[in-house]
Length: 276
Ligand SMILES: NC(=O)c1ccc[n+]([C@@H]2O[C@H](COP(=O)([O-])OP(=O)(O)OC[C@H]3O[C@@H](n4cnc5c(N)ncnc54)[C@H](O)[C@@H]3O)[C@@H](O)[C@H]2O)c1
Image (cartoon, rainbow, N blue to C red; front, side, top):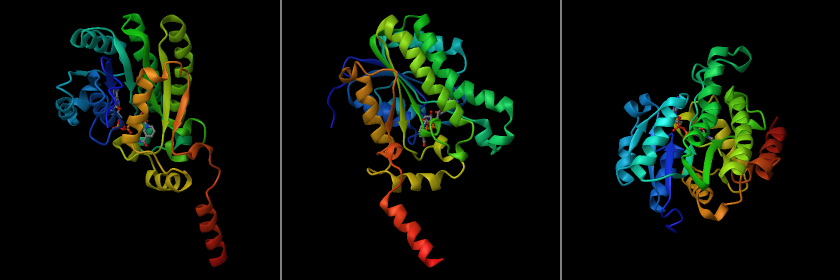
């Protein structure tokens, strides 16, 4: 059911690769809620992914290629978006992450530092660059909302998450530091959503993903949140209903982050103990 929550709003959505992507679901919901927006992804993702299919589903949204580590590319995204959408921007989604160390299965303790720097640049610094580019061009309206997607490995250790954990810790810190500056300067809100493990291309690249997906499902009182549910939550942050929420890392994980252990898991462990 749509509520017209984003009617009249202009946005930019970074990171939709295919229908499993969180950004894909968020774009569909933004469209349903009446927003107009551009879509952006890395040039290679435009060639390999299905972003044009998504654009067609969203009233032929304009697709703009940009490497999120390049400030020049990002400034171009903001300039072009304001031009095609007919004014300043009201919401921005940063749904970007990649770790060459994760991809190449290099253990955290044996990290390749060149890869590590790439992980940080793509997955965290790009968030700073997005906002710096927007500020430089004065591209955001007052009370605009900027959201990036994070994961609880920023606070608690999940060994398979590798250097992405450090990138997420920095991403959340950038939300606070830039959020403070942008809030005073222009009343812009900046938040991260810390999402449950979700079956996407980036998600399933993480070692042991299936195991911790099922573990989180069993531990969370409400179960894991899926990509569509993440999209619903994201809409509230883009809407005018959350105008005083900023500099926060907001857990969207069915209660996982504040649960110590579940009765079901304890019972399973007890059964195993009795069997041994
Ligand atoms: N899937 C999960 O379990 C999960 C959980 C919590 C948070 N997240 C976060 O959600 C976000 C989106 O990931 P997803 O799970 O939808 O996977 P995804 O693979 O669909 O999206 C990742 C996107 O990052 C883009 N990207 C990579 N390098 C880029 C670059 N240099 N410039 C521009 N774009 C680039 C990719 O093209 C892709 O579209 C990421 O930040 C991820 O860490 C995912």
